[in-house]
Length: 115
Image (tube, rainbow, N blue to C red; front, top):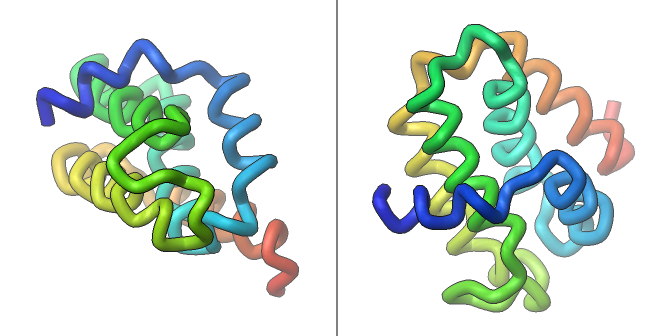
C-alpha cells in the first residue's frame, strides 16, 4: 500500500474524469466501475481522511499513464490498475457504501450502453 500512497499527488477530479472519458472503452466496464466506486467513496464526507488517502493513491495510479503495464493495450493494459484499485477496496471496504456501488454500476452501465 505504501507505493499506492506515493501516487496520491497525481489524483485530481479533473484528471480522474479525463482518464475515464478518454479510456473507458479500452479499460472495460469492470475497471471503470471499480474506479467509480472508489471515486464516490472519496467524495463522501463520511469517508475518513486515512481512507481517502488510500483511495487517492489508487486512483492516482489509475490516472498516471506510465505504469507497470502500459494503458494503451486494451483491457490487459489496465490489469495492474485494477489490481491496485482492488487492493485499495480491500483496505477501505467498510467505507464503500451500497450507494457508492449502485451509482458506480449505473454510471458504468450508461457508459457501456446497458440497461
